[in-house]
Length: 328
Ligand code: P6P
Image (cartoon, rainbow, N blue to C red; front, side):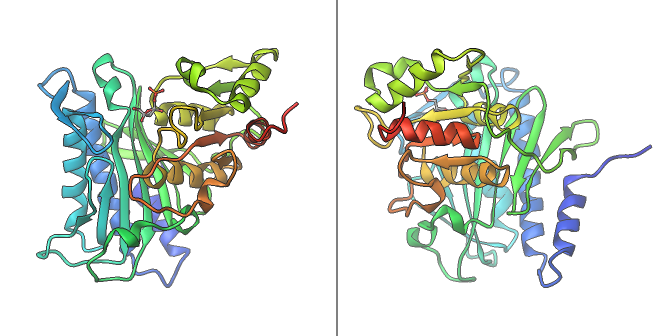
């Protein structure tokens, strides 16, 4: 009976390919896997216990904080702070950076995350996800916001956990994109999608057409060109990790562009656009603001938003041409 390759085994194999590695990264990642399993357990029983609904508070984004948001956020912080691998953390749910409690040693990594993206969909049982990004910083010092303001090209790892019909853990460390599916009967993530490559062109586009009245002409013309094409479908769940994951596997393009109302769109650079852009580029796709490669955007604020066009290489290229007024 083969148990398949667990995520922990896969990480250890990857560590062995870097003989000089201290094992700190692997240990950090293992703590992250524990957090993923704990959040998955809570998300999958939501509705059975009183963790559905809003807390009545709003976060820095001005969004209603869902009880599960808070729970996922607290789970990640608790699972990650004690390991001694992090110099600090940043969360979509927290205004400022999260420093490591003095009773724990500090390490040389920074973890940024959106603990439960799309959580407003929880009470209608739509899949949601955790998105994370890992950067390096000088070990052992009290990190400040400035340490986090690194371009996406500096990420050492990025990934997401998708709490859907099954729970999947998808990540890259710059050596391809690999997907693992949680087998709840053994409580292990098992390798299910090794070295994911996204099709060069897809037949799916994902954009919130409810924003049409705010779109700039480039977006409007691009979407019109798609609608005129045979065989192209619109798919929009309203949960970024869902829309991204489907397009990653099947091909296609997701757009949350800047528009007349919000020049920088809605999605955040450091813990949404950057990690997903690292993944998509490793899978052979691309990610742009419309004018610039996402991974080269120089961050200036922890929670800054950025326009996002991400997915199959040729689709993103075409969308950017229309965005710049060069489409035809
Ligand atoms: P809209 C969820 O709130 C989220 O942050 C992403 O998961 C999702 O892609 C986007 O916002 C949906 O935003 O404005 O289309 O509802």
